[in-house]
Image 1 (cartoon, rainbow, N blue to C red):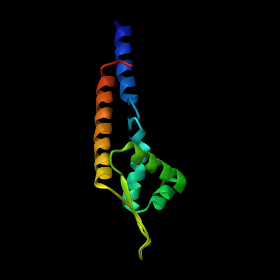
Image 2: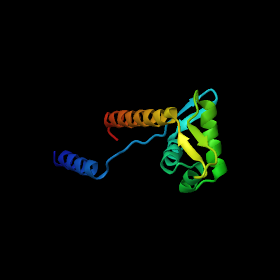
Image 3: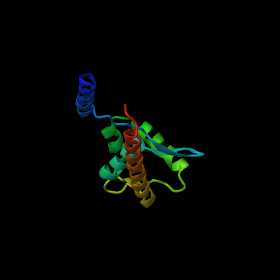
Image 4: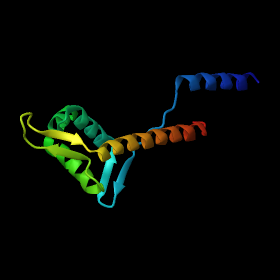
Length: 128
C-alpha cells in the first residue's frame, strides 16, 4: 500500500515538473508546389512591415535571391499573386502585399493555431 501511494505521489510531482508539448509544422501546397509555410509567412509579414523584399530578406538573414525565389514559387503555386512590386519613383519603389497575400497570412495562422490546439487535445488523451 505504501509503495503504491509513493508511486502516485512521484507521478504527480513528475507531471507538474515535465509539461509535455506537441509540435508540428504545416504548409499548404498545390500541384505547382508549396503555396505557404511558416517561413514564407514570416517573409510576407516582413515585406508588409518594411515595404521591401530586400529589407525583409536582410531581416531574415537570407539573400535577396532566396527571398525572391520563395515569393516567386508561392506566386506560381497561387491562384493570385501574393505581392505587388512598385518600380522606381522618388522613393525608389517597393513591395506590398496584395489583398490575397494578407488573406493567406490570416487564414494560414488560423489553421496553424487550430492544428496546435487539436494536437494539444490529442496529447492529453495519452499518458506519457
